[in-house]
Image (cartoon, rainbow, N blue to C red):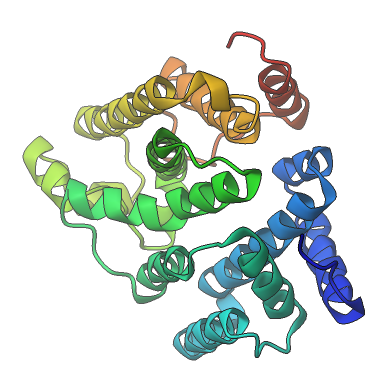
Length: 288
């Protein structure tokens, strides 16, 4: 039996919980349904991911992002070696030891964030799939580990679901990303379908762009279906949080499809009551 965290570690976990609350994420509410030790670990993971991701998104640190990301990699190393001093690193190190969280998974997450920082081009579908794995599947793998699932299919489930969710994000945010000069859709798809980059950057809807969006939606749908086929029945109660997230984003994907992919304007978002209702259905084991 592992020892309870000491005062410094408990304070670090409390700091991570504050980061989670301040984020306003509807998913963070689900953490309170978990056992205390799991909840603390998820707070630490979320806080690390949130703060690292903020480096990529914050315009005020644009010139320092590379340096900040390098520092964050250092914080990760220190956390795994028990040398961390910032609260998030202290909490993450404790959670990593308690739940045997893979340092490599966190490193992959940071590689995904780095590609955002550097504006690395997405040339092929494999490039996009790798990016989705790094920024989304990695988080799912960590959550599955904390929840106690060791089923081999649970790993594949988390990977496929993460790719599906991030593809839905990419699809939803095409217009907003283009406004910032960023295109995540593979260049090979644009060329194959005859979509000029300039049309996307200008957020000008054409039949070719609509076909490109439909192709992206179909790839997401196939990954949702693969994830569902991999979900082990006996692990379903453990993986309810992931299933809830999958249902929310699958509903968003369906909504985008039904509206004809209005992806070049403001990003479409489901209302908070609707998201909570979908999540509650998953938690209660109701059919989707």
